[in-house]
Amino acid sequence: MRKVKNIGVLTSGGDAPGMNAAIRAVVRTGYFYGYNVFGISRGYEGLINGEIKKLSPRDVSGILQDGGTILKTARCLKFMNPEHRKRAHEICRVFNIDVVIVIGGDGSYKGALDFSIEGMPVIGLPGTIDNDINCTEYTIGYDTALNTVMDSIDKLRDTAYSHERCTVIEVMGRDAGYIAVNDGIAGGADIILIPETKFDIDRDVIKPILECRNRGKKDYCIIVAEGVGNANELCSAITEKTGIISRATILGYVQRGGSPTAYDRIMASKMGAKAIEVINEGRLNRIICLNDNKLIDYDIKEALDMKKELDVELLELAKIISI
Image (cartoon, rainbow, N blue to C red):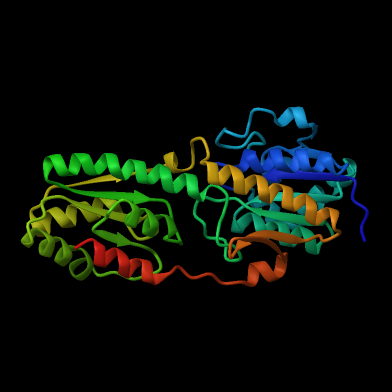
């Protein structure tokens, strides 16, 4: 068993509400078990540059309710280069860091896998609002993003109703439609478009809108994931083909911000504590996951080889209840 005394923690990729809660749990649980915890600023970029400082339980006071990440974050293409990973490994030796906890998404995990293969032990915590990490049913920040988007949908639908318009709302999800589908159902969307399924504009957009109009409906809501297409172009096509005035709203980065929900705070805290417990039990190169409402850990390579499919029954449900 590798002797661990010093643990590094970083946040990588896109920020997500609840990352601070996870950092807080890592630091305080680490302190409880007698470890030194070092915060690494700006993800892998900061690791390469040696932007590292020791964190005490007091250093993470008052951050539980804050969005973003106190450690800052970045996307680091340099980390794909073995020479830069070698530099990062050397920095870990300088600070005597024995294992690095990586809070981030799929790209961050791939970097962590390469790092582990080259001899640096890692632990992964799933942090992304897209909920698109294959090995886990939940990712830190997803619940907050869902609630942020739902609130925006409710507000935009008020205007669509008042003006008898079609509102097209573009949400995050370049390759995954989890936000679009679940918020589409929660917000009562008439049509949901996601990257996982191909769509035909006449069959899947224009015809349903006209059918709804013929049944007496006068306002419409379409949720489209960003990976599907351009919301403004979709609006133009709807107006041209139906005569219904359409307006697009691209929610953008507002989906990443804000104070985390209670669920995200609780789960991020549990996952952060679980990461330390796994290290304390001598299991390294693991990914912390939530499956069947239980926190478990997988070998990092096994975790990255897993596949997760969106529940297509949710799309069918959305169609049924949007009549």
